Image 1: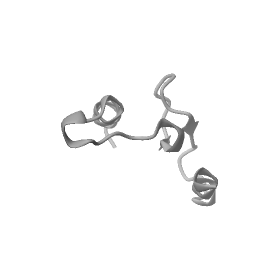
Image 2: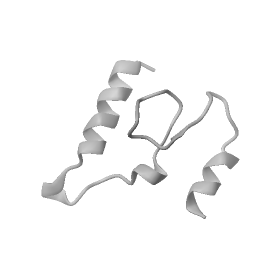
Image 3: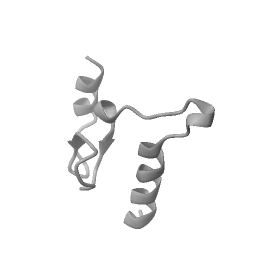
Image 4: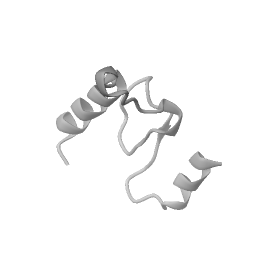
Length: 57
């Protein structure tokens, strides 16, 4: 995966799309790369998907 493209996608989603009412929840956003202060959770590549289940509790 191209880290620059992934970071750009994340930045666009964090900004949101108010004209469509589309926003992401930073509390539920999960990445597998460091991306600064905006994202609450970062996993290690290959980490079990079970980690994701705690986001929805």
